[in-house]
Amino acid sequence: MGRDGEPVGGPTDADWAAAVEAVRVLRADARVLLVCHVNPDGDALGSMLGFALGLRRLGVRHLQATFPGPAGAPEPFRWLPGVELLVPQDDAYPAPDLMICFDAASESRLGDLAGRLATAGTSLVLDHHASNTGFGRVNLVDPHAAATSVVALGLLDRLGVTLDAPMATGLYVALTTDTGSFRFEATTPAVHEMAARLLATGIRPGDISRRVFDTRPFGAVRLFGEVLGRATLEPEAAAGHGLVWAYATRDDLARHGQPAYVLEALIDPVRCTAEADVSCVVKQSGEAEWAVSLRSKGAVDVSRVAVGLGGGGHRFAAGFTGHGPLDEVIATIRAALPPPSYPHP
Ligand code: 5GP
Ligand code: MN
View (cartoon, rainbow, N blue to C red):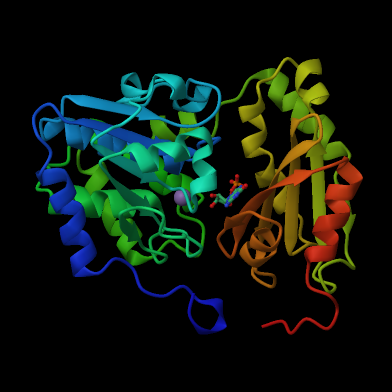
């Protein structure tokens, strides 16, 4: 981070060269393990699988992709090209020749797979979080990139891989996920230029958006109704910028017969709230454990809030893991938001 907490830098020429070298030196029988962050989203899975298909094009034969936690891609991503490369974390090469990490800002986001960093021959980190700790042997971290797939495509280009539709599909899912379908601030001309390149391979954006963003079981529609019905608005919170929060428990999921992934979309209707700059969804992930999603419209830097609570993310979108009863987790968030004296931009 530079002055004012603005992200600086991006990969240097030497970083790119080292990353290209790490792939080029692989022997024909080399084992390559790709890993993305726990509870993977479209950027994590899409950039990992798109890149994996590029490596396969280069002739890498022993190739696995994985992530910590329960095996199997969440339903909205099961159709992604390259999904057949996914293995349960316990089946992942114990000592790969090369380990490549996607969209993970820190080792902790790799769960039990973080140990592979020590047993791998070498490691490469592809990411776009300003808070990235640089935990790889080679780190390609571009805080200005809208998605990790921007970095992934940058490396595929430098490796001389010709983009095709299956590769482009994952990279496009990643780009649309992290730009909120080209609505967020990160949607630069370069983002649209990359989208144009991806679309030129013949992929179908309508089909992709419907599968990833606009399809959910009816039970999830009912569950959202219930959860949104008890959302709470605190206009005085966050130095008067306002906080809106909603929560969902494992019991809520069970009552509606829904898997946990459906809750990933819950932040979207919550963050529409006009009266709140900060929005928050608290999702129960264990007996007294909660996955917290934070969003901001700009007055509050939620990355700073999340980092302070042991998590990470970006200025407008961040998260952390909360512990204890729900009301304590909410109180912790409230207390971590800027006090009335906070200098707002
Ligand atoms: P989401 O709310 O969509 O899960 O995550 C929003 C952003 O916050 C993403 O950039 C994600 O990587 C980051 N994030 C979410 N949860 C955590 C967490 O527990 N730890 C860290 N370091 N980052 C998180
Ligand atoms: Mn991302």
